[in-house]
Length: 134
Image (cartoon, rainbow, N blue to C red; front, top):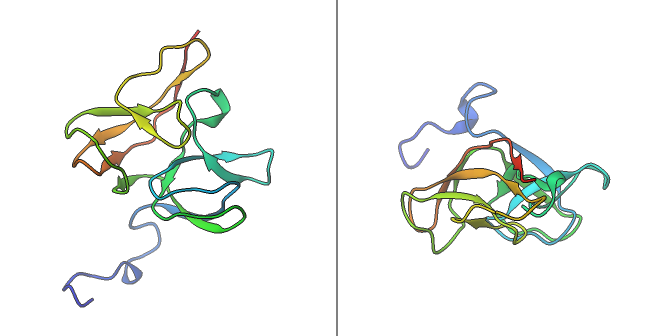
């Protein structure tokens, strides 16, 4: 390409960040962590530590309105965040779509490690299975 890099379209299938075009079930903002709502035609909603079925499976890098197509990223760098502390581990927040440096502690919440801040605006997202608090 014009930057002297190999264009991703020249690479074989399976190379690069895994993504999928999906339909937003609600308004999403760039950087939101998302989950698949299987009871609403597999649409994408903001992930939330307050509910077991709402664990983060990925994130979006662009805003989307309800019923609009949006690319979901299943791993990689989510660089649409703010006010992060470099080197800090982040978890799924009880605030829908967000991250927190403080692990949730309330009964029935989930603790899901999201990744480590690599800049003040970016987390290296790694999917991990959540732990349900008793």
